[in-house]
Length: 212
Image (tube, rainbow, N blue to C red; front, side, top):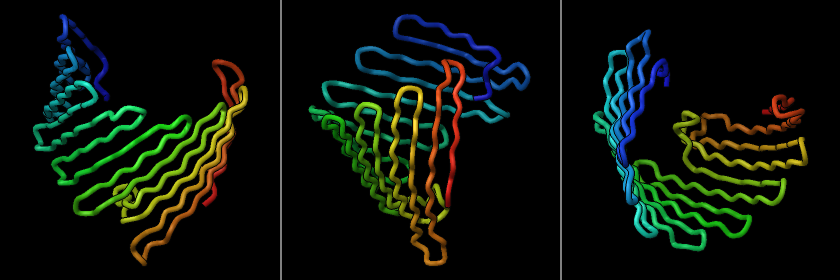
């Protein structure tokens, strides 16, 4: 946020209040929050450029379950329920004002993390990802069947990446493939290679190449 010239924060027990203002524009952000016994709630009121907005958030955690809800005065809202099944496995169900519902399941087995998500709404979408990390090496692969918001057209996005760190040197490689559903759109393939060297705590040198 651009509002940062002056900020005052006051905490009393589980309650926290803060006000941030910009002396040049008179923009401001006022936040009230509460956190105790697994419950948190907040109200954020923003006055920026003459436009005033209010956002609300609340969450509650008990046992392995977490409930969450967010809303604003523009009638945008979302709610979610998450449950930790133990053993590194969790399930989350969410829905919102955009009439899109999503269920996500994630698990971790040793150095391997897996996740699968499915959206239900006007355009169904499936997300898959897997990562492996061991020592200085990490490897990841992901697939997303619906990327209309990112690429401007309904598209399937597949990404594969690998990174290796040895001492002060880090090398990375990533390959991305975008397949558009529309026959008139040109599919995209790209690879990116990069190397970074940490000279000291204050200086690092890096170089990269992108090929499309």
